Picture 1: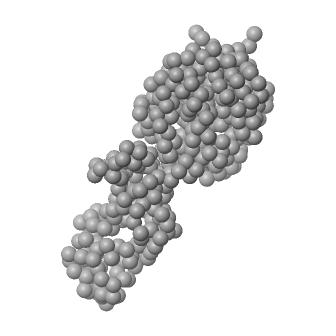
Picture 2 (picture 1 turned 60 degrees about the horizontal axis):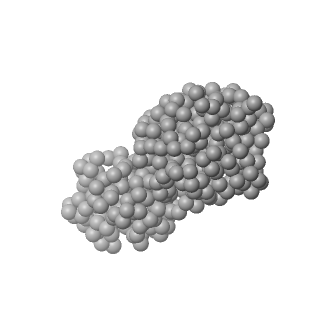
Picture 3 (picture 1 turned 45 degrees about the vertical axis):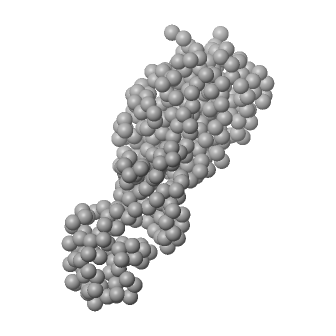
Length: 406
């Protein structure tokens, strides 16, 4: 008689887990509480689905137990992920290590998974809410009682609740004895206190962003910084946002320093500005930075540097140039909050991975309970790492749940 494997959650990790379990000969069933599975996949990579990255590395994954994810990815590496999707009929393209479907459509990835579920005759019970799971793997659901030989908890996190991630899986994990590290928004924008952000809104510029917690640097990244009317956004901000969320939760003072001209070293920039004063001394002072930085940034940078409005460029002093150099290379802003779960791509926090076997994804507390995907305390940086985590953890959980106890 076939093993019955119930997968709670029909997202990226849940669907791959079901496929892996069925390929091991198990009778897999997906229980999905929304109207259709895989909705979150459609929004990944701005709708293009950056499904993995060829530059896979340990430091791309974070959490209280950061080595855990790397062990899991080692069990199901990128090469296996590529083969998995190519076998499903997807043509993949490599863009500087970032792997996408050649169609440029996330829907192609979801369709490939959906077609394989249909081929393997895996039922997907939509609008099925799991109310409870016992340690005997008895499930109470909105569609009746169910019994399983193995359960895979792949219910997602609290990020992007519009896609179905409502955090309900955390309660199920806790009811089974698991610890949950408080989930907080990650890969998300930062709200800042300064009043000049409305002047900056819409500006995009190459920059380095360094985050400080109680004056200590805790994270840094470089890329296209985006200013909003309330603060900062863009890939470098997303990459450091999980550290801001944790520090703010702990009541620490959080600041960020923005290097708005990272292509120049500080001394090089000072010399450049000094020569610029001599060469362009005839210009109005407010035009001094024209051609160097976005115009919307000029007024605030000059004001913050003590350069008065209405002065001529030739009147800017060496001392003012020094302060201006400091501001361009380290404009400081106070972080008041991270944006809520509705704007977050993922969460930091989740089920404590120290309670899960990284070689099988089986719970160390409940026999034949497996966990996969965002429900666990693993968050990756931007660039396909979070989807690789979903594929690796899902396949590994499904494979071992389908095989049964050894």
